[in-house]
Amino acid sequence: MQEAGEYPAAEEHYRHALTVEPDNVLAAFNLGTLFEDMGQVQEAIDAYKRASNLADAHYNLSRLYELVGEHAEALKHLKTYRSLIDPH
Image 1 (cartoon, one colour):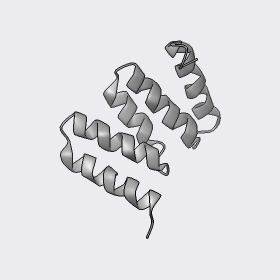
Image 2: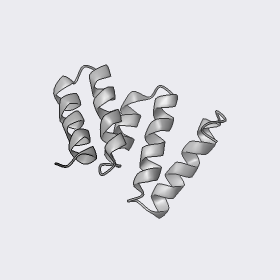
Image 3: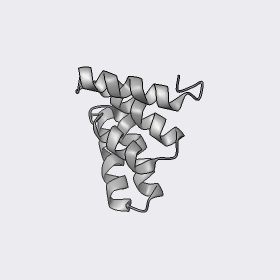
Image 4: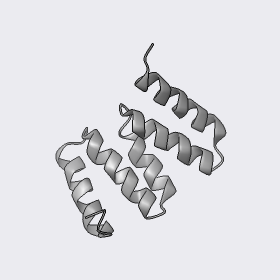
């Protein structure tokens, strides 16, 4: 639905998944990508924060925080991303 541009329906499904399973990090991550597609940066940030054990969520958080000028937060999430993809 998201790829077809049916954003309201996609959001409904992602939110339903999170209602049924609040710790569903994939649904949270996908909700973040949806909000990015819709240009809703703060909502995307909030959604990505719910997917905190996914490296890609931290990468996206870093990118979005840089976009909004929160450089310290951007760096923090970039470091977390790097530690998750290469824990050595």
